[in-house]
Image (cartoon, rainbow, N blue to C red; front, side, top):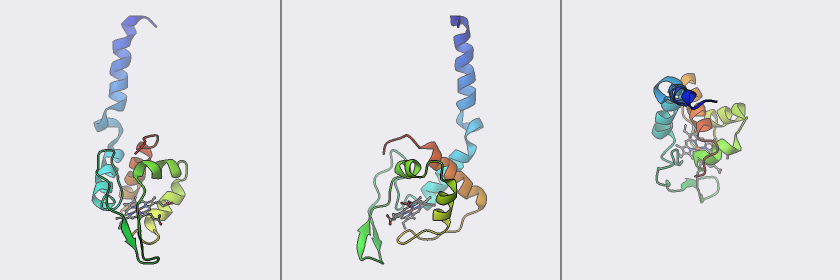
Length: 117
Ligand code: HEC
C-alpha cells in the first residue's frame, strides 16, 4: 500500500469506530449497567470494586464478578446470559428491563470482552 492511502484508512477507521455512529447500543448498555448493576458489579474498568453482597441462602458474603470476567465466561452464550439476567439466582436480585435495554446491556458486556479487570 502506498503511503498516500494511509490517511484515508485512518479516516475510515475513525468513522467506523466513532462511538456516536457505531456503538449506540453499547453506550446505552453502559449507562443502564451503571444504573442497574454497578451497586454490586464492577461494570467499567475505572469503577472502584463494589463491596461483596450478603447471600441470604448461605449466610455469607459473595463478590459479584466484574463485567470483564462475565464477558469472558459468557462468550457466545447470549441465551444463557439473557436468561440469568432476567431470572438471576440469589443474591443477585431480579429486575425488569425493556428488551431493548437488555439487548444494550448484553452488547455492552460483549464490548468489554478481552479486557482484564
Ligand atoms: C444486588 C447486587 C447485584 C446487582 C444489582 C446485580 N448483580 Fe449480577 N450478580 C451479583 C452477585 C453477588 C453475583 C454472583 C452470584 C454467585 O456467585 O453466586 C452475580 C452474578 C452475575 C452474573 C454471573 C452469573 C454466573 O454465571 O456466574 C451475571 C451474568 C450478572 N450477575 C449480571 C448482572 C447484570 C447484567 C446486572 C445489571 C442488570 C446485575 N448482574 C446486577 C449481584 C448483583
